[in-house]
Length: 132
Image (cartoon, rainbow, N blue to C red; front, side):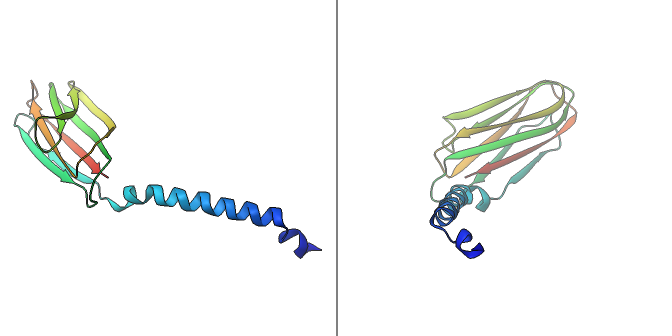
């Protein structure tokens, strides 16, 4: 009797459906897991920095960025397509503790990240990006 309850058609159907839902979730997350997060450091916030990141896949759909640290003045971080004409996003960073992040649609394998100082002279920033 116990084996009949385990192997009835309803339990098998539920197990198959759960398997396919789990497998579909795995396939959707695969590009995200395959990409490495890049870490860029802004040691001197009074200077301009330009960084580049790229995806290993043939084309990317998303770019993620997070910025953390501290600045004694204002600054800007801009995220561009590699052609440097089309901007994806601009972070306007105020003085003080910085903790900003975002995720945007992106249709290229490469991304350029520019740090542009405003009134900031001292501090430190860490910029993390992921293109997938």
